[in-house]
Length: 112
Image (cartoon, rainbow, N blue to C red; front, side, top):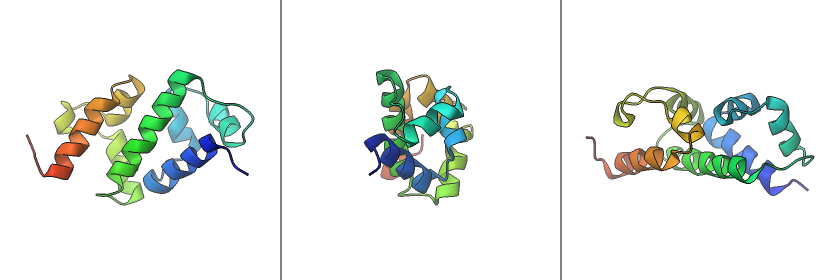
């Protein structure tokens, strides 16, 4: 039986075509750490868990608009609506709410 964290990682991979190394890079941790989470040998600290849950939520929201490979590309590309910052950097900095606000604008068809 897989852990809840492993299921979250699986969802991220399915919806955003991100590999464990991508998740590790976005979170600023070692790929081995993500692997241990996936195997149920370790669990993320609270701040890392929050980032992981934010990433899963964002990947899920973006999957309404984009194919998985496009979600990954969007996350790592500069976005005009984010003042040319990358969503991945903002998520890593704990600024996921800014990314979610832009996704909400996309959903509502509002382009500023």
